Length: 316
Length: 229
Image (cartoon, rainbow over all chains, first blue to last red; front, side, top):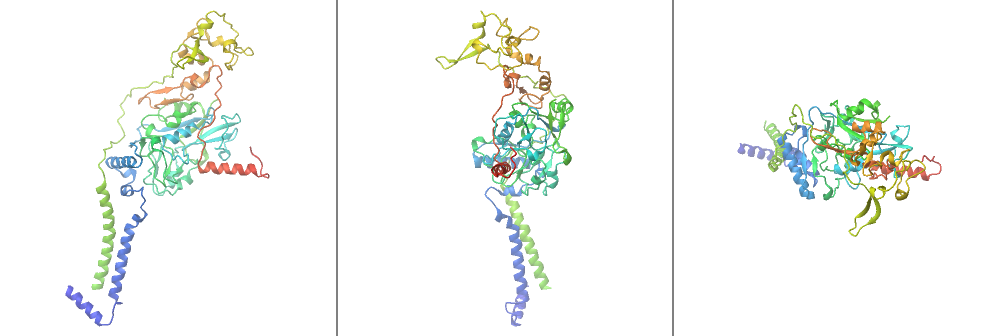
């Protein structure tokens, strides 16, 4: 075979083709294609950043991870947090409980607008300190109007002002969530207990969901969230308050690392007036069901057809 | 024929490189995995009749011997209080004390009193100043003060009993753990029960808030723009 090839090349060279033979051209093209294909295969390596490990990059979608693999992933994340911040955290995978669908109701008659819920969210969910991020935005509204565009978030006077009412807005955990249907990579979905979650390791940061949400409830991590080591909440959930990477979306999860263990969300515990009511919509004896049955209840932007699991109500 | 062989081998080589490259990446990823704890599928079995661990106990103020602060401190720095009976043991009860217009006098004159048309002895017990008095005259310990409030404040009591009035913490699922609730006097001063005015905390710093602030400042500064404030 080799001899035959040698003979061929000799023959072609003698025929006066020189370097520009068809054979050489094909070799060059083939080599170039091969090299290009190899370069393409390893191209993602050129976009490597320090905070992205190989395991992060190759990780499967949350729903495709077996319990064992997810355990491996969470152990790795705990170790990375330990290396980067020196803090021992526990990351858990809290699944929906059977027979539970969460509902939240907020009493506009007694909310005083103190913003303690927003602050508790900030601390509980390991939010970025410099930007003061929180999943809750408290609007100061004119009495007699529900025009959210007129709601002010910058009020800095003593509260409550008698001419205003105060309306905290957070994720409404819609039954028909527009943020989920626009996600091009299925990085966000609705769980069986009604909570809309994000897999931060699957999100590509396109922010479609932020644009789709009628309640302005989603937040984007423009930078890697900075939390001083001493302030990191070590009780973390994979789908909730673990330290997020840069460039991913995040949102209120009703503190699922707490609520799926039976605890009340952090914003409710921080509320000094008891304006917040949280519970299981499927339990007829629950407090949330009593509120829905006996109070004047409405949902925000009902005409959007989002069917929220978050309700607002008035006394009398 | 040979040319075709060459082209196909080049293509096969390229494909091999692509697949091989990704296999190498995948392979190294697999070898670096650290064995972690096995996570059990979190859906725990719920027993047929879950045991109620936590009732919903209202927070009871410690059963104390009430004192009135004098504003003085003793040698160890502890606040000095005067027990009710220090003065009231010899005083004749004044049923009108504290009624609108009269106001608390004497030792209590600095106290802010704004609780409707009640007199002091509507709630305080003239037979025993270390206890309270229900409307029907029965004695009530200070620790059970909530019962006193419930005599008049029906809607608030109804809402409180259904978990939609008053702060709380603990568990929403009472089969998992207890819940601790505030009592009336944790938030309302019984002598001036209107909810206090607060300074809001945690001013927003996100982009939307800053933009809104900038817009408002702009509209406040420009003379043509109507002032919405």
